[in-house]
Length: 346
Ligand code: TXA
Ligand code: MG
Image (tube, rainbow, N blue to C red; front, side):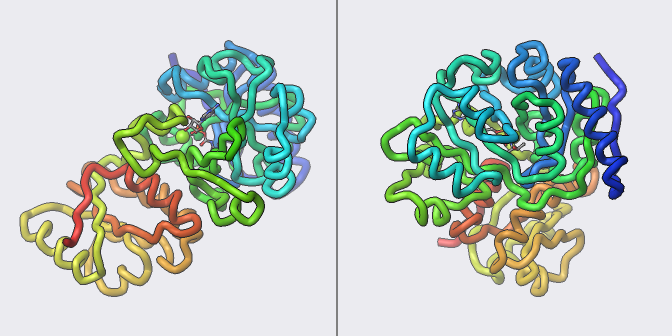
């Protein structure tokens, strides 16, 4: 089934902006789905209390039904309406990091539509730090279920154009807020256990959380592929570019040698590199993703870079690996999921 997808282009004038949000909100109230910008990536929103609306998200994305959605809220009152309990730890995290790239997994009270949680008794909730997202939430007056606005398996969208590439004809509209800032998704933290557990690394780092909490754990499945992840979505293929992605784990000379070998073997290679590595390579096509010493730049550019290379242009994509400190944990989590192969020095 195909529909016309309205693209509300970016406007500066507050009156125009208001009219766009009004239109998008009217569609949401009619149980349609609308993509909107958040500070992390674009989300694909629908009324989280309406099963039929939420079902449209799964259909548009081609998302497996057992993968629960994150619910977005405009204020803490909406959280109270959705969960049975807000623990002191959860309260502390909300106070410190909301609005912001942190999703809290709390006990659901059953108000959200059943397909939002994919049958789990818990609910992932966050308050996005983006004026358009907040204004859309307030105007609609409902919590919005919103996964990243990509076709399932593709890199998450960091511009309205990325959303359009994946979902034109499948959703009611796209609210354009320009490129998103953080670039990787929110950190998902399970707050239903005695010690909070990071289920997915993201925009709020483990180091940030440790400043506030006496103890935080990482889901062991994050470091061990053989373990079953606690977050259902973490088990699926993700973030896949059109051509296979290979990671190179070694110094810049090693990267350069590997690239040379692959070219000599007749491969058309696309490179994703930090500014520092790019300076040392004489190669085209190459996409720079910022300084390896400023991982927030790399996070911001990562998904755009993964979308840049087309199947018709390159046989494979070679990308360097990054430090796993700070937001580097989220960057490497996504790269490891996107990659089909890793070349290492021993
Ligand atoms: O930054 C973000 O979080 C973006 C923007 C749009 O807000 N959203 C996003 O949603 O990344 P999505 O659906 O692409 O990823 C949601 C992740 C999945 O891995 C899902 O399994 C997990 O959160 N999740 C959602 N609810 C959960 C729950 N109740 N328990 C455990 N994991 C949950
Ligand atoms: Mg996603």
